[in-house]
Image (cartoon, rainbow, N blue to C red; front, top):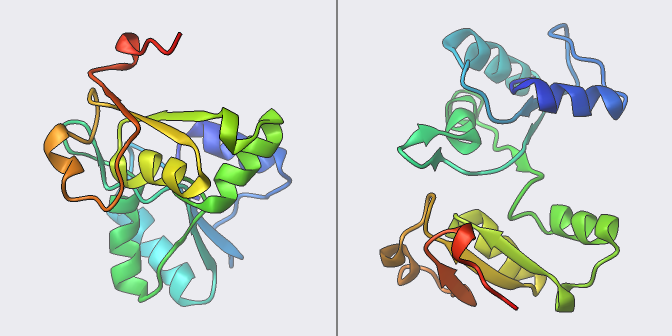
Length: 162
């Protein structure tokens, strides 16, 4: 397991045991403490048959801080196996979130700062989308996408839907 305390806590709550002895899964989330030993162990376990799960494919946050997808890149390259991403833009996570909130896609809006994860997830799930420009994606990134956000705001504080 590579990630911060919140991910570890959720895995424990779901009944997982965290171990580095012949694990069934290698799970990667966001962390600022990623190092060579973690990458080496994770790649070894994945190459040896552990299922490779990651929270999201984001490569960086604002300021080019490495995100989950960037951490997975080394593991993927070494092991030759791609992770299964369970977070945005996975349709599974969007359906699970809508079900948990007892919401329907027709009455739900997703707000995000990343076209490749947040806005793509909303688009694929049939949600209206709001891109905020205070994070990863910029106005100039929009033209490279085959989809468009429904609304664009400088930041979350500027959103006024009512």
